[in-house]
Image 1: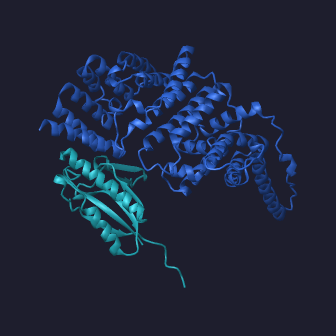
Image 2: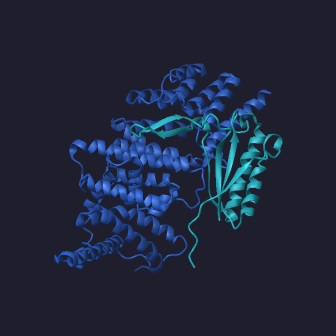
Image 3: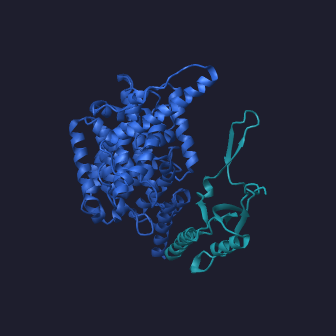
Length: 423
Length: 133
């Protein structure tokens, strides 16, 4: 054992445990087969390590240590099970000798890489609801505890524990094995996994204005998962695109809200607060991915984010480029939210009235006609066009429709400022 | 004992006409609510609090009498004079302490920075059965 470290140690151990979690789980599932029981055992081994490592120092081979503790839990469980069965049916079912669980000397280089991916694809299986997939991914792949996940989503721990255990039951009953999906379904399964990671990121993005002191940061976790995906699939252009998109969006985090949690729109943000390292990494990732030529929606959205992040000021933003990217993006999917964003780019390039014209086409689209963002964007474009009273009405309508407190406050304030100025 | 403190907003213009408030009035009100929640937390009284989305999105649901599927209508009920805008749940030692907290919420500032004197409905939360001797 190495000497216990001080001060930052618990944080460092926590990071290491999260890093190791999917590798340990992969190894245990491969040897034992039962995903659900293995997952419980690994979770317990992580909890044991979180308590004992800071006290006793890091074991020489942390992964082997965790595998061994988890395996011991499993054999204990098997013994208890079989003892019960012996009593009931006199069936003798010897537990496996403990040494069989002893980890092989580090011989797990390649399978470990696949394990993380197989685990992720399993946790994001389309048979699960997205909420279940998110919870299970955070526990089994990201290595968070149920308590941490519950706090992050502001639900009681018992509720989250139930959600996770039901997800595991569903995986069991639907017969999804611990194996790489067939060639035929791999693309779709991979896309589902990327989507879950992106949902986790957005959850963190939306929740970040709340009381976040004791909460795991979901955006950071999603970025970590994005790195893991790219590590195991380095040639996947959309995996690179997703990581780039998350980095380029998260880079603006510190500038996005004021001291009281109030929202600050992109064009009013203090750009010196943006995270330059994240921007550099994101731009490199997306440029390399785009050069490969397998263009996809995450890469395009990342490219748009990069246009914003690389502009020295709001006025210096390359709007024609952004407009062109939205054009390509819209050919790939019929999503009214995209039209909404494109209308902003149209307004910046061709003037607010052109943007308003495009927005008018959304009034007939039931998916978005009543959405607060349509009213909010329309308010901004009316303001730019100098139609102040129309802008006020739009901002008020948007405020009455949003379910986000910081956003409602922002919209009410926006309307109030215009009213104060026009009086 | 736990109490739910409910803030009811009048119908009509709904939220006390906030959309006609001035920038400074809005700022003062938002700041007040934020500080109030923080105070309750640091006093160790806050169990939970939620604000509800505007009533325009409210729906009333009843199971269909034929197949028990959800029958959804716009809500809230047309005859209601006010609607629930949000609530706090506090854990205190007496009803009086809950009333005192409610009174503090009641004076949230409105137009001209003057107290709104909001009506706050205070209801005790049902608890577990008493411990047997």
